[in-house]
Image 1 (cartoon, helix red, strand yellow):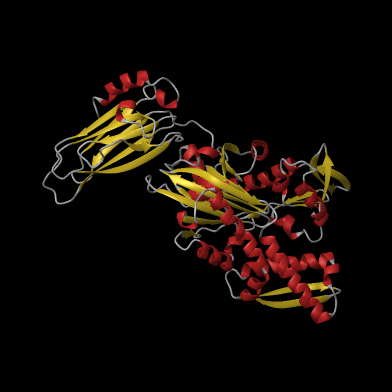
Image 2 (cartoon, one colour; image 1 turned 180 degrees about the vertical axis):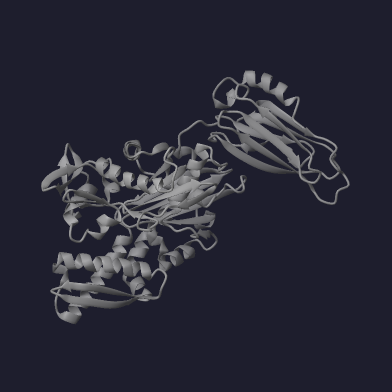
Amino acid sequence: MSCGIYFGATSICLALHKDGKTDVVANDSGDRVTPAMVAYFGKDRNVGLGAKQGRIRNASNTIVNVKHIIGKNFNEPFIQKLVKESSCKIINQKNLPVYEVESNEKRIAVTPQEVLVLIFKKMYSIASSQGGLDVMDVVLTVPTNFTTEQSNTISKAASVAGFRICRIVNEASAAALAYDIGQDTSAEISNVLVYRLGGTSMSIAVLNVNCGMYRILESYEQMDCGGSHFTSSLVEACAVEFKRQWRVDVRDNKRGMAKLSNACETCKHVLSTLNTASTFVESVHEGIDFQNKVSRAKLESLIQSHLQECLQPVDKVLESAKLTHVDIHKVVLVGGSTRIPKLQQLLRAKFPEAEMLNTLAPEEVVAIGAAKQAALISGHDDIQLLDVESVQGECIPYALLVKVSNSDETSLQTAVPKNTYIPVRRQHTYTVQEDKSSVCIGVYCGEEGSTEEECILVAKLVLTDLPTDCQKEKQVTTVFHYRREGSIHITCTEVVSGKSSGVTIETGESSAFVGESSKSVSEDVNNTAATPEQ
């Protein structure tokens, strides 16, 4: 069983690829995302929804936003800001930030790594409820700016929890894969902007998709911009309204403000789908109940400045990537805060010609893409590769090039790009001239952009006795399947007549593609290609 995990600052999501399908798994509460929180209460440790529900009464022992302090030094300005704002005490331990909580009537220090292990154990139990305990292959996702040390910390925690780590990929590439960008049409070339706005942070990445490969052109992340700011604006407005009604300032009551914040967060979510919502808090201050009706227009006016702040970095990222708004073909929305209709409207105004991809739940997009990548690595599906710069594994150091005789293809065309991770499947279709009864497919090994003389012929497939009197245009579909063990299986089929030919280049013969000398391949593979399969 293969799964993908998106570990965010405020929530974590797990998707499974099983029986050819990819879907998000609901937790024991029926929710498809789980709060990334851990709470210590007496002898118990609550993870997920239980920790969130008890946060108001147990704020000093509830650990949140652990993702933000992984791999950071205690003296960094951002950590110092967290120390001042966090309800749970953060202390300095060997220049590293560590949480101090009360457990079993004792004050103990809890490292971020220990918190991660507890959260991943919770996700492992959720995955186990779907069966497949014997194999739990997982692809983890991390932000594009994560260091190797930070990625390894998350990977080790997941391993301790019981997962078998296949690969770590960046969140932007996983989000693009969730929508199969560049996978359905291998020849597709496009620029994709992945816009993520979560609970406490935002990130923007620009990807270039070429022949199914993802390359990050530019990325940006901001830690103090997220959906929590929208909630805070609504909380402040409700506090002002409470004071107007009762002549009492609830802002001096921490517990009352915590209750009001929970109610406003729920109200904000409702306003993403409905035009009006109500906030009701029982005994918010000195036994006084509070109820307030909020419209979507009211919320949008309150958060207008925050929305503009969230969109300003988009122009900077495009400028750094040397692109304009017209160059972006697709926009992928990630993160729960992108559900806000006004934000989507502003993004559409910025990219009027781009396709807005928001059919998948934004909190689940990254996990779904990671699960698809896990299926590929585990050999459970023929999904294609992910971003070259963000993954590690065996890859092809040379490109596979094709020349088709008796067609419009007069020069070498790239079939499988250099640095493609295996296993991988590529399909290309070529048009054959109507008066030709045969076609020859020549497959070469070399650098992209090289001439025929500079490349090595590794296979030649010939289709003969093709119809010349057909009314339909003749097309030859060629499939390149680079298998896990290193062998290459190439088949070509003429669509009208159904005639086909194929050849398999075995592992030893194709060793040049994974790093050995190319001289032996040109000799051995030519012998293999001389007797194609009919």
